[in-house]
Length: 187
Image (cartoon, rainbow, N blue to C red; front, side):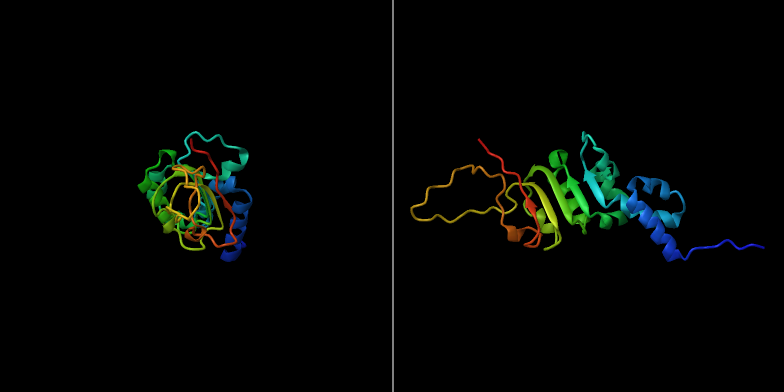
């Protein structure tokens, strides 16, 4: 009678996690091996998520990224939300409530990209201080900063030419985190 050799469960898990991380496209195939493997590797699918990008043309590097609309993303199992570390929001067709729900649900986001300007008072307050390593996007006035008038200074234009008016200390990034904020003119 022969006994099948078995790997220790920790080693087996480590092997499958390495395989999924090395080739995220294989994650769907790996998930079909066994239920335990599915539980181990499924979070790899949700490390990088694009929400509501209907007509994105995908370069090969983006094929490993999970794409969702907000209801699908928020109503599925839920445990994957904690796995999301890289989040790209395309808020053109999203309501303010949907954006707030996504930011509230993704508690471990470290890299946040917002592809267009949006104004939702308090949206970035949902993220914990120091949570983000990187922030890229066009957030318009998440905190309205009105400079106090200085004697003899020229008055500020009604529509300043900068699309972003925010104080760095209000962003949930530490002071060494890089910020990329687009500069656009308003006429």
